[in-house]
Image 1: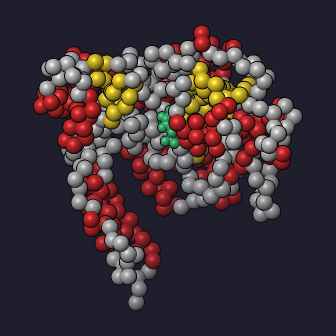
Image 2: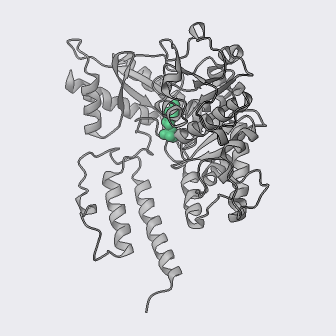
Image 3: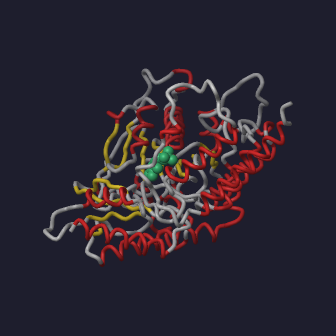
Length: 458
Ligand SMILES: *Cc1c(COP(=O)(O)O)cnc(C)c1O
């Protein structure tokens, strides 16, 4: 006799919760990364002929997660721009996992539809964007950038009397694309995928912090898509939105801002001047899985005008109820999709505007502290620290640049984790403080580790 399915589910869920708790308990004591973990027992060339029991599978996952997951959630991981996950967001996503809702249409999940609508409007509000804007959750800022570029393309062509949906792009009026010289690779990918072609890009030169220089902003004629950035992935600096948007011909232009993490500066009264005028754009992309610390994968595309999103993304099928303004399948690229809004709702409901602002500010203070500690120890800080990103270069006692060797030593050591990048022709250590649980003690410990390893290379 087989056991009832529900008991199986409950048994496994309890076991999984125990394993997850064990992982979380070790968050601040274990090493951040272990490049030598043995993963061979997870790998087998053939699909199993003799499958293992579900409990055994859970135990294997848990055991290997303890050694080979990168601890991005414990305050000492500073790689890429990877956020952690807040306690409430993690817990809420467990509940959402049990629900297993497809949120393509409100009728599929009234609870998820309500949470989606609420979280989307809170998001727009917290980010200081116009109350009339529409946010739609999606898989990442890459997808959000692509969605926005597609909507921009269609809307610009419509203004010139061209319906891209039916007529396609062959023979369509040309669109000039102006991007920052520092635009993110996912925006360039969106230009490729949208059929606009990277040859149509006119590059706007940037200054030594990675911001578009308004004095050298190219003049364009005709339909123009302007792609700006809140939060340079290396320096954290943002483009001068108010000046640039004030100069473009709004009748023939669309301004999109990639604010994967940098848009969150607008959630903090003391940081809003960094992104002054950001609210004037036509569309924005931002991640919730980075700086808001929602679990992966969760982002949002935000459009100033709801109809621009609907006009490009709507599908009509006989079995789809008509007339719903917030059917998610009509607000993005995916039909079936997870209830991504659930953890976002949980974070915003429990943190509120002030809590979110405090988290963002805490990360910025932590980044400034790290720059200060390492700068005092002799590292060169390559760009003014204004947000959560820090760029550093290191030399040995003979004055040779050893930045790459130090980054490699840090990654091999595993007590903390930083990545490397090239900034204005120089190799740099790139630090991002994106886990909102990072404390000053974490920063002091990370700085001490960096200095200790630096001395071994001196
Ligand atoms: C991370 C990032 C992206 C891509 O976002 P995903 O969520 O990884 O798809 C785009 N732009 C910027 C500035 C980013 O930091």
